[in-house]
Length: 326
Ligand SMILES: [Mn+2]
Image (spheres, rainbow, N blue to C red):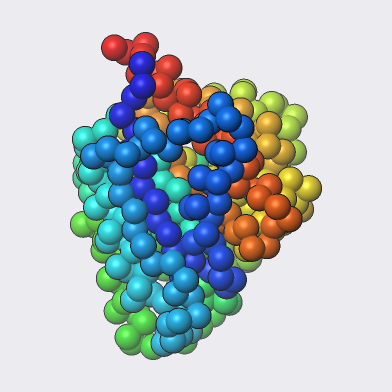
């Protein structure tokens, strides 16, 4: 049986340093045409369960008014639209998949999950080379794709304050944190990081403060992706609903360089695929996001092809999950 999966496409590259992440949305569709068996794969989403949020090709068309949270005004708009689309998916569809450009959209996704479930405890599996828990007060770059988790935990990490943030930026930061109805949407101790390997002291201070679980690439490889997935769900068993955020820079640089901030020593495709397949077999997992495919930095369309392989495995698993229930 085919389940009712909501697809939310967030076509934006506003949160990163390099333009092109917004093209990842179309690159993954093109990747689906490589194998004739997959022709028509995206047709299943052409129903009431579909939303596309369009802000492509704006990275260098907008001035940088706020250097510690670049493009924050535009990104607040994306947060609101993403939150509404995701909230609707969580409430009215069997499962929600977000395919995003840069990873800043994930804060909007978390806001949407919280909006749909204000009284539920949210757990997050963050599969990413980066911790994405910077705030305008701690960020070196001011790029908002490094801040999505920080917009959800209501802790600005002022102990590690590094920037002298102006009043307007501070106000906009409070505004973006409020999307979804509450500033505290998530406890950082309810996040599990997978393949985290490139982060700053300010971020590791927060990770230590909340005793957040970090599964390194080597840990996953030694235990196996399948067992790792089960252990993650077990460690989030006190949470009511689980969101899996997959930044393709969690993948190893030998897989592809088609992402804004590639980092060595990442996951292989078969590991990420098995991890996401097993995670999505659990009923508590309601939403998965794939982000940061940048084909302009790739040779061929390798990263999108890897992401599509993982996406189709997730969809197959969701279909099986719902067939078992119906
Ligand atoms: Mn990320």
